[in-house]
Amino acid sequence: DRFPTVIYFEPTARDALKYMTFTSAGIHTAGLNAYNEAGIFLTSHIVPTTEMSSRGVPVFMTANQVIRRAKNFDMAIEIFKDFRPPSGWAYLLASTKENRVATVEISNQDVVVRETEKQHYHIQTNHYLTPEMRGRHLFLNSSVTEDNDGRYIRIQQRLQQAYSRLDVVEAISILGDQVDPYVDEVRGLGNTVGVHTTMTSLVLDPANDRVFVATGEGPVSHNDYVEIPLSG
Image: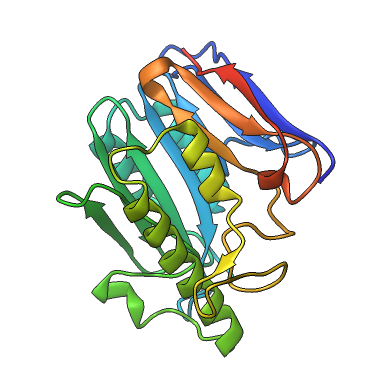
């Protein structure tokens, strides 16, 4: 997409929070990637699943309600559990003020939460990871599975290497990483974190009330990042 876009929302409804979304021009929803004034952050990952239906609430509508209304981590989880989308999704959910992070794994039939408590990092790519949902993942082909697992492995490698020194610059480097962990080589196409289809890339720095958002056309993770203030 040619126009990465950040939108600030200031709802007039009494129970609605201020929030911001990281999206593209023409997609005016906060259901993809968003942050609100209570410190709730979410980002979406589509997951192929066997539990699909022609009925359900579009997940972007549910996520939009989460970011408008959720004042804490548990409230965000409860809103996700109130609705079922037609297809599979995994939402990374973080509460920066409560120091809690999880993935909300969703299908048309169930919602399962994978919360990180003891580890120093939390990783999510486009697959289910909980024992309850793993078997509901729809196998498309081996290359898709290798890509999901490969990106997870490489992010884990980079985070472990950056332990105790992870900062904004290092995080941006990880998002643009081109090493395929299966061959341990830099690749233009392969099982890499940075890919040519990456349209949105950002680094949240809530301790300093700022976020760094990548600009330009895909792969945006290789472009310049712009610092802007967080909502609230």
